[in-house]
Image 1 (cartoon, one colour):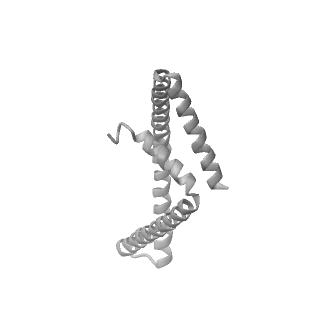
Image 2 (image 1 turned 180 degrees about the vertical axis):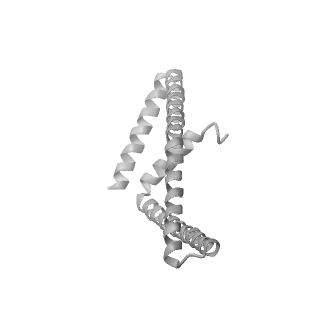
Image 3 (image 1 turned 90 degrees about the vertical axis):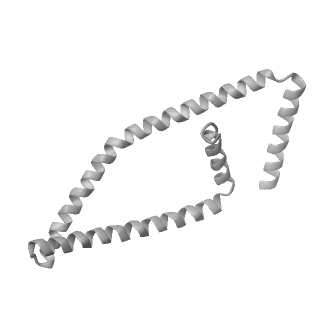
Length: 141
């Protein structure tokens, strides 16, 4: 059920976030701040772990172990960027294909539904859409 209507769920979430933009921005910024805090803690933990390991194994000074730690972290960062450059194009292609298929499927469903309606039902549907749009604009202002 969820897999079948996943594109509609995403569209509903997007519409909801546009309607409640202030709450969405506040929640997004709070989650972004939490994410950066956690990433900072993880980076500090990794950096200190590498630094103490280098200092213990090679019996270097603090400055020497910091230099070695910097180059190790630089190498890890370059490796992560290389991995990201390899994965992002595939992810983009999959996402693009999903959006195109969802758009085509929903467009076909709506066309079939519209063609199956009689003229009175088409007029009722059209007037309902216009009424909802009018009420939505009246409530926003």
